[in-house]
Length: 426
Image 1 (cartoon, rainbow, N blue to C red):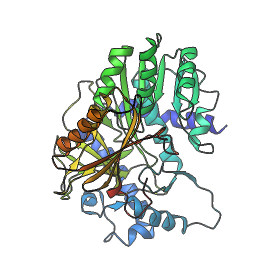
Image 2 (spheres, rainbow, N blue to C red; image 1 turned 135 degrees about the vertical axis):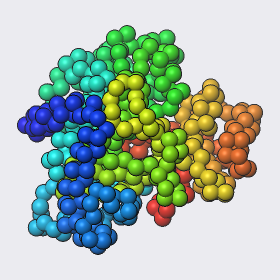
Image 3 (cartoon, one colour; image 1 turned 90 degrees about the vertical axis):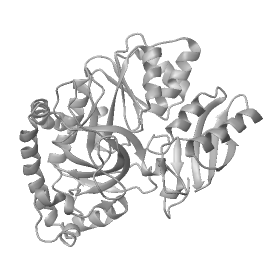
Image 4 (cartoon, rainbow, N blue to C red; image 1 turned 120 degrees about the vertical axis):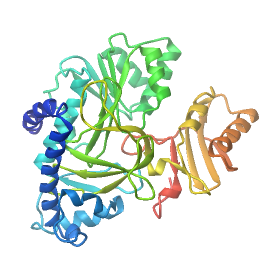
């Protein structure tokens, strides 16, 4: 019954999104301002915001309002729940905790309808058909509203497998299913491709691969094209909101009817096209616990201009990962780890690895290697760290039997403990 309400409750919103993705910029802006005004009015009734706002701000004042971080979201949660009688039941979800801080967020029905409708748009506009065979290898904890949906019989072509299943079991499951569509995390897909490549196998019926939860690299996209002959459609979502999705042309479109996205440089100014900055969110459909200029902890590249697909939704450039996934140098630079990742993946002996920045000039490379790394391999790895970071660092190489996923099912290829603050080290 819960899944039925989700799907059919979101259906009118989904139909609207099919039209609004082609609205003129002026019409979309007017729609956003109307939603933002309602959001700001709801926020002004919450003590967390009323103490931070000066008066009752309108849409024109948004960029002058203070930003707040994930650490402060607990204060917001407590401020919201204090407005209701003890024991009040809310629709809620917990963040994955990949930053070292698990946080709870509350949602009202309008937010959930918008989120489900936006997800349906992402999937359907990329050809997904819930009736045809499709496999999902992910992790959704029991008790979450999403679990009710994916475990229901309404998605009659959908089959689910936990990402924590052994990789040979996942590969055997996919052989039996022979899916037309497949959704999984990039790190899990990479490991599955290793198995299929070693066995000279493909998924003959596959038409499209969908991914999310982790950064998708260009090298993995190209490997999928080469091995499986299909394109990938990625999405950028979180517990808090569903931010963006890839259209068939490959652009990341912001779900502008659902959320406002700002890309802010470290000096506080908006990032221009091609510049990297912090992702700052303002939700437009959650009037129970609105997020106003919320720093989610991610970095992305700003983008501008029209997409060849004809959709007028604003664009976001490449996703660079969470604050926790970017390395920091002594001269205060943030360095993406993906050049290093590409290099390490080219080392045949490395079956699995994780890079951890312990301090400004000290790193640990945990790896599963077969055969064991040679002295030459280790010299090359250390040299590449220094070249990529453009500074001298110490790299301790630890060969281990296994590197586990996070409890959320995600796998972190790169971790900077400098971004973890006082929480426990990984």
